[in-house]
Image 1 (cartoon, rainbow, N blue to C red):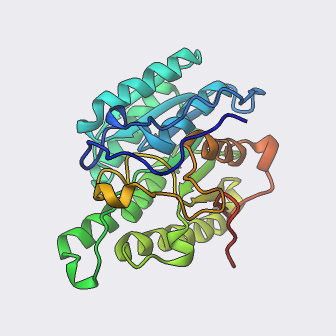
Image 2: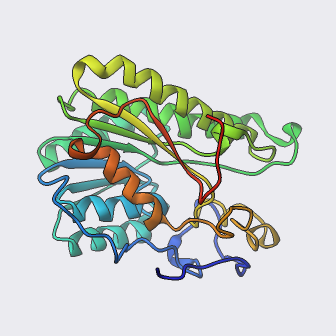
Length: 288
């Protein structure tokens, strides 16, 4: 087993939304030990927040399994998106870059149409884009922050699913990114945790809604993962011990989370699984 970075971590010179290219140590997304089996051969996938972190690792493994990939990202994350595109091309697959903000319903509709036209269809939607900002007290959360968190983290998931469904056929899959915070809560992430809990409920409800249409909906709920999301908006002293509280004593790397998305996207592996929230917590356990 390759030894992966552990706390303490040095200060990270990034600010929201956070460029992965400037992080040190770099998040690991290449998954060199992962061996493909053609599980997604010929499929078309759309990944929001695919420029970095978990989204990038998912894009790479989807491509390794034979899928063409489109990624949505904020325009200021262009440099990271180009790195993801190069990584997908290295796997021999097509990568389409679509800059924009998933909190905008009009953009989501146009983005889905662009992806379908460019790739020739759509089989998999991965809702992964997220916004978070730690606040110590509820009084510290502005109405603007509350609105932005919900607009990005849950409204954006709804928008993308609604417009993607016009193109997903039987055997299609929607995979949402939840969080341990949505299962256990988080005192410093009231709004973020609330959206993740909503994502879990949205997953289960949409799965039941779509079962007769043959479209599966599942969710991956990770614990701490070494991505730009946390270091970009937290002080250096809080990032230093990021992930140290897990049983493994470190955060997960994106390449350790991405295989779960492959599993949930593959009808060969998870064709009978829908409506599940899969926690990935480095040995920790949850009640539900």
